[in-house]
Length: 121
Length: 112
Image (cartoon, rainbow over the protein chains, first blue to last red):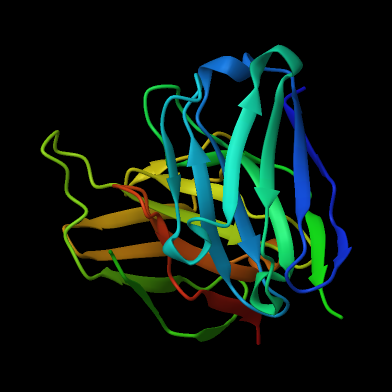
């Protein structure tokens, strides 16, 4: 069964750091682009970052550039999101998602259940 | 950056009746390969989003054929031929042409 399981969310103070993880199973992880998408409380979906299967290309939404880093460990079938200098507006449920085909990003066809990040003093 | 705009914001529907959601992009999503890079997602209450339609008109695996996507360039439509109670939730369109990827604001579909 194809599955994504996020972890690492929690309560952090403004300016603090958090590292989210996403464990993948049931497919050849290293072949697929992977993405993080977030959803603030009561709000819509916002794409955060995307990384190519070999880690050679990465893209970010402007609001997190320089603060967040997407990475992956294909040997561990894991995706990560290092979040630094966190702000209150970063509070959200963070979803890990697989992009549908290895050749390109977009079309996210498998989603995890999400992990919640709370930024508050 | 590409901005996605959906309408309506809210859509009360009657089971068995058709429903339609519009999505407009600020730039063309038509690639030189002839495909429109536009996705539709549904987020049911309390659940993660799920992919319904990719490349403008292709149903994702397991999606019922009452869902259809159409449009090209900057104007797109998601249609449900006969709404069922399980179709309630928030529908999002998304630019999948190039980063930064961008979602529309969402359309909440609820049963009358």
